[in-house]
Image (cartoon, rainbow, N blue to C red):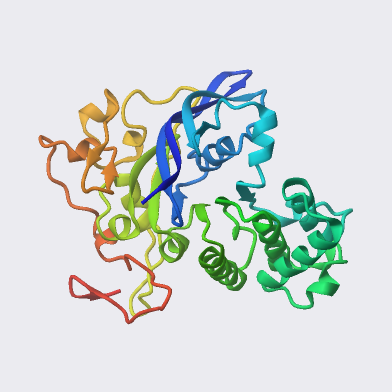
Length: 356
């Protein structure tokens, strides 16, 4: 499948009074045409910084891209002039941010805000831009688009505002859409509607999506591939099935163990990952997750692990996959989890004789 984006050895840092915070440390990832790549991990793992670097939205100072390539259509986004980047940002690569209220200008009507990228990037006339803006409002499922076009952000609910933000992001039919936890500020029912909307729109406009989240339940429903981030690095990457059915990194085990199950017969037990994320002002010498892992070995504290290939699509950054490492089983909580939550809500699955 053709790659629309390829990131190699990306490093992003922030200069602070205390020193250099190494927020992203050697990230490699790619995005194929028409696919959804989910980047998951707890707060502070580097998810948002990675994608903001792709958009060149890292505030400089204090932040800067220290090293790496971000190849898009033969151009390295890390090195092109800002003027050229402005032609790409919002047109070829768009972003949906977490909080729709702070993404919208409260002093401008919704219609004008949707028209803005159309006038700037598509060189449309105002009548054509208005017509297209109303079409986009209809596309994202807002009723009475002609009326809504003239209204202001405060006249919309949270879910409706997020639909408006999606309409703005889709205005120029971007080749890449970055969604930075777009459902975090919404209640569960509206979350489901927004996720369903994004899946439907992807099929209609054939865009590639990078979806950032800390919720593995969301990932199972929207993604084709998953990249698990921890301590500014990608520690495991694979297809959705590989991450949910055959996770190999202890951090991925921890994330899966912390998910609620669909089992209503027994007592619900959620496991927590002990400790806190590493201090990226002074990153750990070896495996960043070693201090929080029950499976850490001596080498984990001395040497950073390489990536081990499990399959053509599955890579894991852990010494546990070294041929000489002791063989360990995933925690029982991982085995008994509802490994995947299909969008069609299939019948409960039996895993090792337990209804989950």
